[in-house]
Length: 202
Length: 296
Image (cartoon, rainbow over all chains, first blue to last red; front, side, top):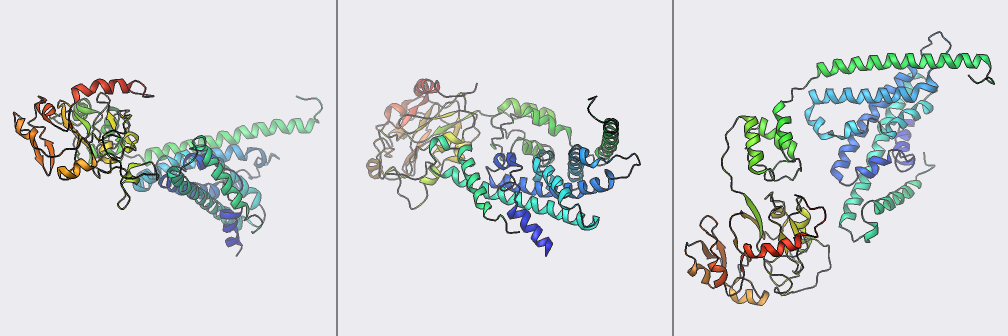
């Protein structure tokens, strides 16, 4: 039950784009066409899930190692380490995909390397650390990974909604000064307001 | 070091820095090695000819070759044995260079240009209904809607072709008909595909004489819809010295293999719908000036 709650919370209540305002740059940049929004969304789900899993491991098993010098590296090194780990991980996964699954590699295309340093991906890694810190390592790892997956799902949902609206906006008779990005911003704020209705539900 | 800090904190700050640098060194080295190993182990053999062809191609991703962009075409040439001649914007030059990379021979290719086969602008074509929908020819040509023009073959004038052109080779004229700027046109066929009424066709650049009408209705019906449409009077067919123009299905059609662009049918046509491009080119050059961001 708590995992169901976790997924609903990550997708709707604290949606990364529309409630926490992270990852806005691809949200505006890649939401012009539904097809590219789907590609980007799947890439984000993929990277967020992997990154959540790996950064949680790195945080608790690598940075928390009692090295016997009385220094705890977690607090001040985690951002730098996370970025390096996520970037290398994505590079690695890209190479594996290119070799073993060329079809998936082509489908993800440019979006996979594009999101290595996305703030939403780093954000989910950071939030996982503070959220799943207590209550056992295994449960925390599961929760963090699931949270990463659900956050990616929420990002994809926001991106899909936005791209569907923007494809219709292309055909609509928008006043000239509002055409393009301005009307996209207006729509984004309306979407965020709508998602505000979920707040406090889970 | 700031003197206000207690000694212990200052010392441990030094320790933190050292430890941070060490950790990052180790992590960086490990990840670097892993990536290096992976790049070796998971190396994919990309045929270097693909990259070479991609360098040669114009990289405008116009899709004239029938593939989803220049990269897809380069792969198709190398792996699937597609023809070297499919790149319209690149023309003969690119074809030669692709053939060189692939070690194939080249055939001669006739340079083409887009021709708009409708002369019924706002001054000559009769209007039938007001249209206030989406400003797109494709939307306006939906079956069941009233045609803005009385002629159901004619140009809708909303510029789908102009929007489709990636080479600044089309402009909307002041009478609601698109004009082709022939020096910019690379015959990629984007406008041909964009036109819902199939008015635009690709024809040899060396041919100057074109019939600006595709209306297959009988002459009487054509007169009702347009002042200048082809009424299938057969005069052009009779005067043509090389048997290159024929009235097929109530409209004059030029056989470009035979046509010598002598211009006799242009003078003979009572409707003035056969046009000699040599004369209109000046008009187009005038229109060409204000095009923003024009190439070449």
